[in-house]
Length: 111
Image (cartoon, one colour):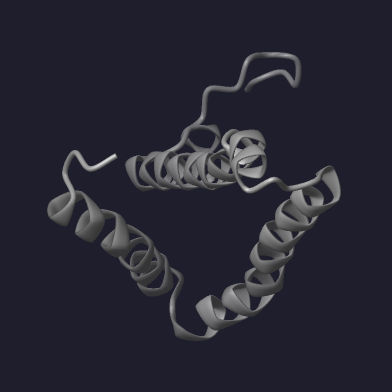
């Protein structure tokens, strides 16, 4: 019989292969969200300078981007609960990567 102070190494505390896979997928998805936000924040000063924008206009751009992300987050989660999380996740990845792939194939080095 084990004492309550011993280190419990049951299989219930370990992640199985499916859980590890899901953890990696969710971590990568979160990283993509961070990259999307960085794609707005990093070039914004240069864009605003080129377009003769003000700090107020830059703030509106950031706010609009965050608001658009937040507005679609809750309905998307409800849709995923009703129709399947995996299906919606794969659809979202496909929809977001398709324009990037198209741009890369048709304009490989066009700056």
